[in-house]
Amino acid sequence: PASDEEHVSSSRTGSNMRAKLGRCLNVAAIGILSVVSAILFVQLQLVSSRVASEQRQIDELKTQIQSSANEIEIQVEKQRDLTIVNIAGTFTLLSCLITIFHMTLHLRNFNQPFVQRKIIAILWMSP
Image (cartoon, rainbow, N blue to C red; front, side, top):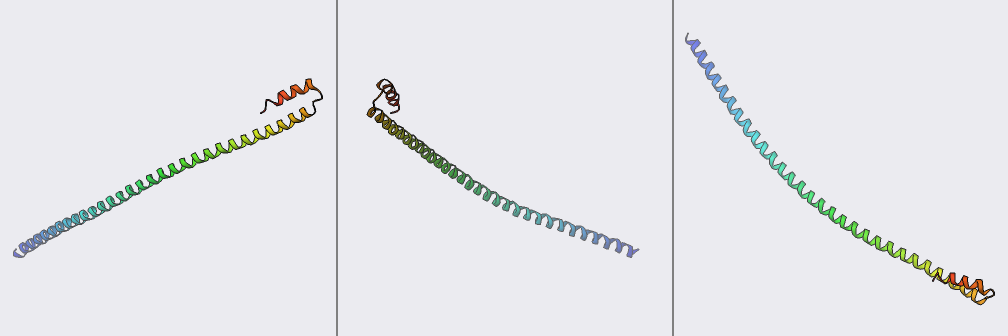
């Protein structure tokens, strides 16, 4: 009978030791998980701040590109307007020269005054 009691007693102490060991392991595992989650949280915060910083840089670059594009568009529009004025001026000058040339030819050879007066009046509309 004494050996049964010792066996039960040793079995209880073994169970108690296993329970204590299990609790210690659980506490240690929870502590490790807490530390790991804290490290991951800090890393996540660092990554989030980097992403926010880079997003600000991207937004600044977008505004710079947009302002540059607007300036280029304005310059192209001015250049286009200048080109149109140059072309219009060239054709106006050309039409005036041709008209003056034809008017002088009609005035030098004024053979049919009734018809040529009307031709000169029509040619005079160009300049």
